[in-house]
Image (tube, rainbow, N blue to C red; front, side, top):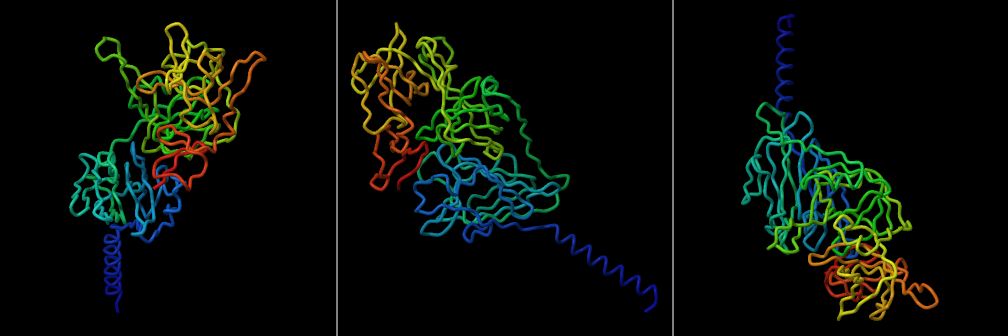
Length: 425
């Protein structure tokens, strides 16, 4: 073989290699939840008392050159489970698939359990065929949302696998807008943001005042307090938080009198963002929380909502199943909704002089305090009726009823124990 022939052979070989490399630009990335090819933690029927097990929100799940992230919905989570039919991913909120830099997602195929597919694709980004469970497009990232369906029981999407096809990005590749985050150094600065603003919230010795049965976490730092609403975080009363967390400024809006001209009012909330997780937050448990002492007239203000408050030497009034504290024309409802008082707790008699401690909030109709401690003023001094921390093992129903401490005898429902929500099916 002469030199010319050898050069031609080398050139042909190089062309062949280039052709193979060009063909290899397309890559398939399989999230196989049936066979758990990513070795993810999943929840079984035996995990009824651990509602956070298998929840993927806040995780970064890589397969090949694609990353999957998730945000819980307002009423449902995104949870990897094993049931009698096998393993699958339930989606009650949003999932986002993102390609590595320089790559683009061109096709996605979902395999679905029992036809449970309610996802909607991000507007203006490719095309989703809900009959074939296939998405096609050319995008660096794509978000699928189950929120519109997940407000009703049983409408979570049930996904057995996700096959993501990627290729090199090109001039036609769509890139979703990048979220700009406002960096705020305190809860007070966060509450000053406009509703809907995405924020990187710094937590400096922020205390967890309590956890409601629906997962709402009442968090307070030295500047203010706020509700962590539907963030899907595994936190307990008496935790102290340091670090930063990505959230959006939310609100629970209410209007005392829609007929008047007074602007509506709000409970300030931190709600989920695509980057919400506890990855950059350290948690210290079993701390002693110190409430702020208020005069009743000073406490009844929206700025104090979610704070751990104490009101001293006030008269308790009982009207049916409701208990109130009134000074002049100002009134505060008090109740043991969170189960931080012991199972045998009985409110003092009508007309008793008490000191109460609890989480100050608005229930949609009136100001109220969710009790953590009650002290009775007696002739011999202060008698502590109940120390709240010792009662955390009590189980509280969604209606605020104390159900004892034995979870094995509970009927189906949602409950709180030790500051954590769990579900009995």
